[in-house]
Every structure is written in structure tokens, then in C-alpha cells.
Image (cartoon, rainbow over all chains, first blue to last red; front, top):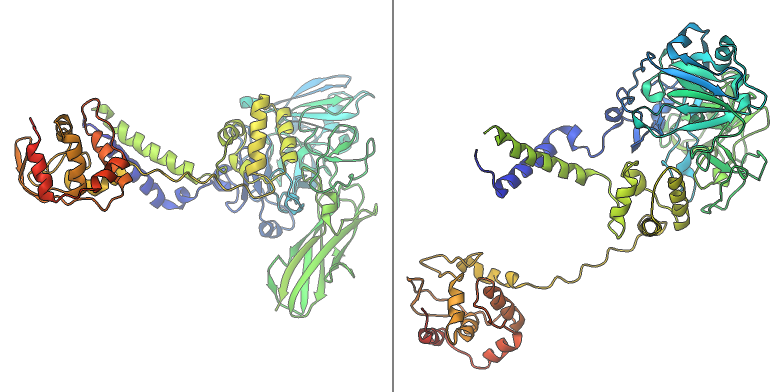
Length: 407
Length: 230
């Protein structure tokens, strides 16, 4: 064998590096793109973290699909990396079992494929990471620096948890105040457990499909427990166990993560904090990120766009927790001094977002438009979202401002 | 024979690893960086940590949270990590990296003046330039050899000489324009080519003293003829 000395080895190493540097964009890019991390995702999604996978939908792409967010574009916020599940293809139901227990008179185990035989139910809902908009908080908070693209409007289809309980003749006991869901730990995955209040049972859905297709594996397929109106984190992916419990579970995803400060033992929306300060999170002085707060986004015009004037179509979406309807969306072009009512696509309660639009008469030049939603419970969005500043940057719903030019 | 592909592929693999490592977002240099990498990279893409800018208090809270997630740290590790994070990933710009202490000149650096003729390792270039390796040891071993070596470097040499049975007759320029310190350094570097035990290292003071009585290259040649070389 020809002897390879150090010099030859170094030369070959240099050759290898040169080959790589020259060899195609795929190699030349330093970090993998979204489609390389998750099979079937749009390559333009922003990679916020590779491990576990966190992908944000660029706002213009989100706005390009105002009806429903397709699986290729939907954001990903995984706390757990389940080996082999980084694809938008559906995961097999075969062999997947779901355990229902805790404070229920008749605990049982069900095969996931049995769920297909039960009545199927569909719900269109906003799926939003509770950290969405986090990067708008000042000073910056810890966590993935979401812009506004940690959100999507999707249609889940599956079996209502209530229907499954009824089919099995099981009933939660009176002591059951919370529903706790556990994600699969296959492949030694980290623990992921979340609890929601028992009243969420009314709409809880064991989702098997999304947007008319098998539930993508990366979004929790084959079975995801979804709670319409609740922030994304509560919609436990790859669910294997549902427990009825007397109290919230005590794992890190329930406390101190995914919580905002509140006055002790109240469920006020939040307790204002000095931005940049620390807070001693406990079960009593904070509440979990449960129900989605009122929010609205401007989908057109987009930031920095130049549009034809003087009549400018302004449109977007608005949503809340679905408990009461969104009753109005207002638009201002003078920094909030006066507001102009936009037309809603529909009225009535909805877990999905409601589209709104209006036409403004604007002179040529630079403009800034703001949008603010109101719901029937009188809830709205703060003009300055920073007043809800919290250490971990959750639940931002400040009024969105978009600057654009009228030609 | 079957293993002939092993080394090239290993080399290319190493090149690839190096290339990829250079391409990843990294943490700023600073004490504690390795510890942070070791502890955080177990679960996180390090980019997630590298882009944070938080106050010491809030990094402290993040560490508390990570402890809940199962991060195991000794109190010393914890404070080292917190110091690193608060300093280099804090709300104020990190301190500039400690200025590298002015690199001390080495004899090898001064020897670059000599290596064009005498070779990188003092191997020489016969028949034009004699080797230093081995020959220097013989010079130093003879009586008066130590001061001759200083003088030949300082003032140069002209005249026919014999080294290892080979005749050389070229002019060697003197290096009096180098500083006393540099000359002492390069002379001591020559000692590394082989010197008998007990030879004292040259000092800048010795060089300075030798400058007091300037010599011509011919005079240095005469000195050399008087050395009892084997």
C-alpha cells in the first residue's frame, strides 16, 4: 500500500474542503434549511432551532394563504424530537395505543385505529405558539425569537374525547378538574406533559387528520389531542395517555414554562411587570398559557410594500379563544387617534380566524396602518404590546403596525 | 491494499467536519465556553443559546428552568456557566477578548535571515553554502569556537574554508545591523542545531561587547584558521 504521509493527508483534506465549498448550494449553506430538517416543508420557513425543531412561517407566506394554512407552511414548535417524525407525511396508526385513566370511573386503553370507527368531527382553529410575537417585547426575552409567524389556521378532524369516553362507557369523576395529556416517549424522547382545565373537555378532539389529509407526523400524527381556543402548547402531539386529574401536573412544561404572572389566585389576564425584571413563578402567582388572547394581523399591504392609491385595500385576520365572537376590527392610519371600522367576513363564535377588509383613501406617500380587534366580551388588544412584558415573552398581542408607501 | 481508500476518505471526512464546524453559529470566546457547549449542546442547537442576550438575573432564571428540565450541574459549574453567559451573552456588549500578549520574538524568527543560504534546518546547500547542523557543534567544541561563532554572525566571513571535507569559498555578509537581542536569539537558535553540553547561552551583553572591536570578514577568516577543528 502506498504510504500516505502527513503532507499528502493535509493536501487531501484541503481538496475535500475545496470540493465542498465549490460543490452546490446545498453544501455551501452553513445551516440546513427547513425542507432539509422536515421533509415536505417549504424551504423558505425560518429555522429558529434545529434541535428540537422550531420553524417560523415568514409573514408574507402566511399572508399568502389567508383561508387556511397548508401543511407545507404551518409553523413547527416541537419541544420533543420524536425520532423519525420529521416529515409532513402522516404517521401510521398501526400499533399506536392510547391510554385513558386517572380520575375516571372506568379507565381503558384504545387502539388508535379503533378511533376511525367512531363519529368524526371537524374544527377549524387558530394554532398559535404562546411565544408568537415574542421578539416584539423590549428588552428581549429568552426563548425562540418569534416574529408573528408562529401561527396558522388549520382544520383538524378526528374523534371528540367526549364521544370516545361515551363509547367506552367511561365518565370522569367529580374530583377531576384537569385533563393531563402525555406525549409518546418512544426513542427515548423527553417527557412532555400538559394540563388544561376540565371545561376544555367540551371541545377536546383526538385529531387524526389536518386540512383533509392524515395528520402530519411533525405536527403530532398519528394522534394529537387538540383543544380549540387554547395556545399551541396545550395541544399535545403524539398523545399516548390522557389522565383526568385533581390538579395541574407539575412538570416543567406546566411550571415555570408556559406561564405568565398574575395576581395570586386570580385569573386576570396578566400582572404587569417591570420590563427586564424577574418573577418568582409559582402555581399560585401565575397562570398557564391556556386560552388564546384577542389578536389581529394585517395581511395586506405588507410591511415596506408600495401600493397603488388613492384607494387602498387593507385586509387581514382576527381571532380570539372562540368563547365569544369577534365583533369588530378597527383600522387607524393616524397612530390611533381615529379608527375606521373594517368589514368582517362573518360574525359568530369561531375558533378559526375571521377575515376582515376595508378600503382606505390615502394620499401618495408613506403611511402606517394599525389594526385592532374587539370581541363580544369587550376584550381588545393593547396599542403598546410591551405592557404585557413577561420574562419568557408569552402571549404578545399588541396592535400590529404596518408601514407602506402609496404610489 | 484494501485499506488504501481508508486514509483518503478519512482525510476528506476530517476536512468536511472542519468545514461544517466552521460554518455553525458559535459562542464568543471566553472562559467557560467549553463548559457551556458541553452542557447545553446535549439538548439544544447551540445557535439557540448563542443568539440570546439576557441580563445575569434572567440567565440565572434560565438555568433554574434548565435544572427543572434535568440539567445536572455542580455549584462551581453553575457559577462558571452563569458568569460566561452573563458576560458574553449579556445585555451589554461583551468585553473585548484579552489582547494577545505581544508575541515574543524567537530565535527561529531571526533565523529567517540565515535560512535562505543555510537551509531551514541548517542543512546547508553544498557546494555554495556550508551546513550548520553538526558543524556548529564542532565549532563550539573547539577552543575559541564560541566567540568565533558570535563574530562570524556579526561581521561575516571571506576566504576558503573546509566543512565536512567540502571546500567552500563564498562571501558571507555580516549581520551587525540586527539588534543585540536578535543576534543573541539567533545564536542561541544555532545551539539548537547541536551543541556540546555545558555551552552557555549567548546574551545581548556579549554581543554588545563584541561590537566594541569591529572586525573585517577577512579577519574573521583568520580567526577561523586558528581554530583547532577536527
